[in-house]
Image (cartoon, rainbow, N blue to C red; front, side, top):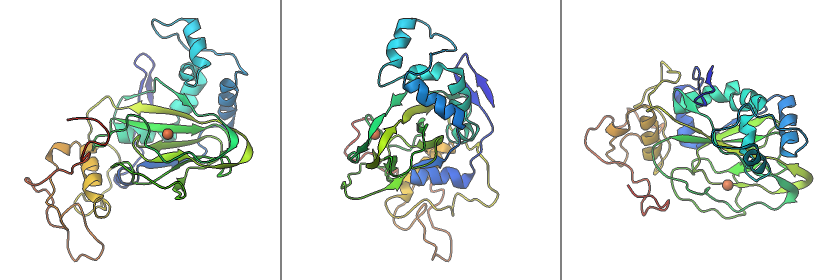
Length: 303
Ligand SMILES: [Fe+2]
């Protein structure tokens, strides 16, 4: 792993395979339970609770010590990103960086902002929501990460999300549940920023810290993760009706083939079922359609 402190970027060997990258496109998340060492988890809690002195590795240009003190005391304590121990063991965690280089390519940009979702438990569940400024599209220019520095079982109200909900606008009744992202201290979750999620209900007494931040793409996409010999773009599973077209688009965009992607509809590629006796028609069509990701632009962006 090469870390460039000047640019705040890193580079490493990708660790995800074709199937895992496609799974991320389909499901919209990936969990790494308990990957940060306990000592660092404790230090993170102490830092957030003001129990240890700040020791920034540098003071960003144009900022003063007073600025850093103000930021540390806010709900967005981004100064933790300047601490050497946080950079080494959390931001540059080996399992996380391998996944990031798979999804975002070389020279991944480190976060500049941290949101601290600290909650005194017990609490009722939040409403299901897409986070502010979400965008629907095949591009994966940034990925969101959350970090639980303390044991976060179901009872402490971990993040809950709805797999596959990052490809379009979703509403969901509060009574309906999703996938619980619980895990031991040091759990990192990676998810598409547009995924529908909430803080789940907590039932025990205690304090839940959660930090959330984004990693950024700095290079055009290409298929430079781990290639599987028996993985074929034509026969891979991209999802069911009204899903496969979007997942296929995202995966092809990540392969650097987003501009060539065309689909013919119906039972044509990238849709398929396990009961076919041959591959779907329509693979590598040069004329056809692009999926309409944003329909009436529910995300509020124009193109
Ligand atoms: Fe949220």
